[in-house]
Length: 257
Ligand SMILES: [Zn+2]
Image 1: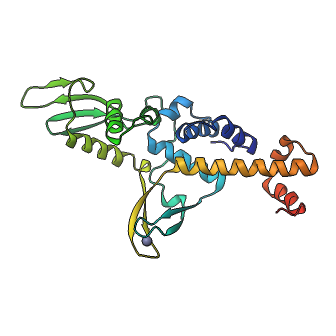
Image 2 (image 1 turned 30 degrees about the vertical axis):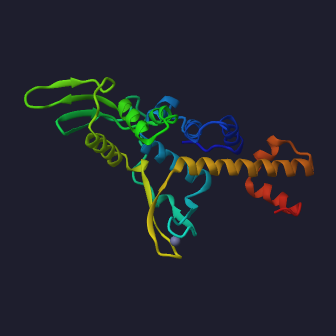
Image 3 (image 1 turned 90 degrees about the vertical axis):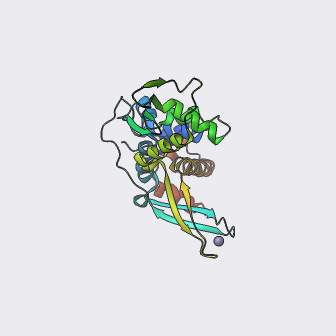
């Protein structure tokens, strides 16, 4: 992992401006983790990708996370403050691997299923799906290597892309198995409303969180460059090369700090 300069981060933000947050996250990771190729990052499980994003977030903006959610019962705004260590569930892979996520298997309802964990390529491929059911089926289609019927002594190979309908119970079991094997991909925050005491859990998505944070940082940075360039005539490159402390000190001198 390497430190991204302000110039580099701004360049990635600009390059990925109109992309989906998922695609933006891949490009930011490629810039920050030269020890991985883009393809290797795309093949990481979602939990492993999110573990890298948490590491990057700590390096860019620190370990403190803040968010605001609406209580589902009384609609009161609830402010959250937590630490990256509160939501880390799995370590980052020490070595990049070209073989993708490890194979997994499950035997249930008369079938033996061999599959792998979903990765970023899978999620990008289902981004255009309209319904949750269609998205899940397409995701399973991509991640399942083989299904074998085990009724009696007869073993029958089944093609998932044909007329075969994967039993609902099996779909749910595979999805549950995937979630348990890749816990960083599904972070739930336990919340309690201070007003009405309603308790619920809310999903935390580091992709959305960090991409929005980088967007806000870029907008603020450009505003500061604009102000300093207009006041002093300095060029963008020189202002970007300043530390935040020095840049803010000049803004204070302009009465804007
Ligand atoms: Zn409430």
